[in-house]
Length: 117
Length: 111
Image 1: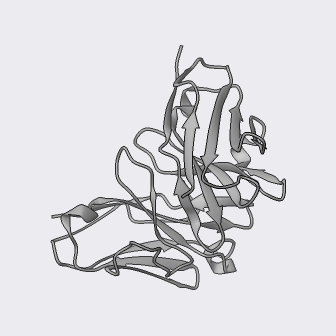
Image 2: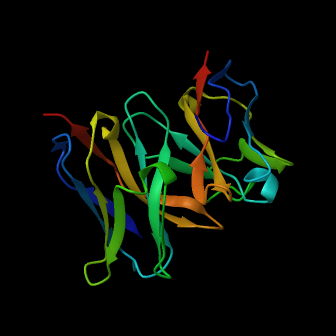
């Protein structure tokens, strides 16, 4: 079955760039919509952006100037880049697969990213 | 603050029925965008509980049901069990924001 695995640094310094990867196994990334969702400590879930198999991306408006999501089909990977991070970007980050008939039906296990000097 | 409003908490005794509301607007639920529900236990990944307003994915007990009407949706849980204690989130799409949106989340306590 399809599985997702996030990877990347657990600690990022303020003003630097947060970079995460999500490797898809058991299926192709070249279909479906793939999203990134995060949860700051003690808060709820926030969708922050995603990539559609058609090649389009969409982002949370408040992050649009700092975020880039892309895919590497040859690696079956989804990537997240969040620039100029602050403590407010500290969160658990998940990648997840989305379809209109199933919602976000498959999630990675999540990775905690702390922004601190 | 999310565009989908949920009660911060609900509670019920084992065996009872509880409902969790998700109130949106004409740019999300009211625009016809479907609502999905997720169950989230601390330290784990959220789990899809109800898709497309009322569909239960394979493996989800029929104690869980969902509905949508107008600008709102709701999740009902019957025959409450201790293992149902978790955070529950609704999720839809907002046309004005061009964004997928989650509700603020509701913490279910089984008394």
